[in-house]
Image (tube, rainbow over all chains, first blue to last red; front, side, top):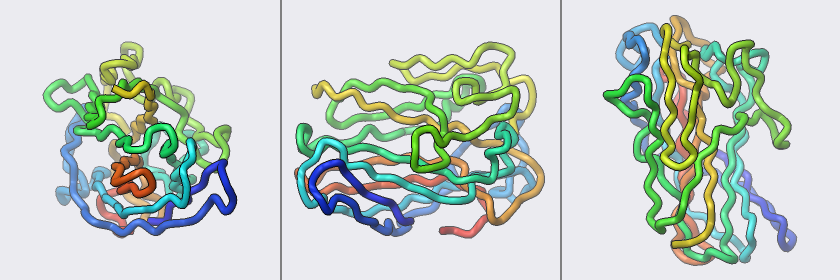
Length: 185
Length: 56
C-alpha cells in the first residue's frame, strides 16, 4: 500500500513508501440489524481488516512529517454518501520527531462497543500516556483539506448514523451515542 | 505525560447492502505509529474494505 511522506522542513522533504500487507482479519462489527455478510457467505456487505506495516526512517527531524494515504475506491455500497460515493479515500497522520522524539500514536483497541448496540466506543490505548481528544472530521477525498466527501441529505461527518436521537461524541471518553431506527446502509 | 494533544479522525462508514462492485471497496482507514528512535518509526496502516474484494 503506497503512502506519501512529506514535511515542511528541509529539501528534499518528500518520498513514497510501499507498506507491505502483514495480516488480514475479519473484525467483529455488529450492526443494528445483523444479517449474513459476505464474510460469512451472505449477501450483505462484510468488512475485512488489512494491516499494512513497515519501518520508515525520516532523514531529519521535523515537527510535521505527514504520512498520507490516497486511494481510489471508496465503497459505493455505503448509502450515507451523496455524490461523493465511489470516490477517493484520503487519510493522514502527522508525526513530530523534533519535539517529541520517542512518541507513539494511540492505538484503537476496538472499533465498536459490542453488547451496547447504540454506543460506539472507539477505545484507544496510548503507551506514552498522552492526553487524547477525539473529534469527528469530514472524510477527505483529495490532497487538500477542502476536498471532502459529500453525504446524502440526512447525514454529515457530524451525524454519520441515522438516529432518532442526535449523534453525540464525547471528545474525552470517545463514545458516540446513537439510536438506530433501521438497518444502516 | 506529554502535553501533545493527538487528534484522530474517526471514520464511521460500515454497513450493508445486497450486491457488490469490485472496483469500489474501501470503507475506512486509520494510522498507527511506534517510535524506535528519533528518526525510525514503525508505521501501521489499517485498511477496512469490502470483504469479498481483492486483497490489495
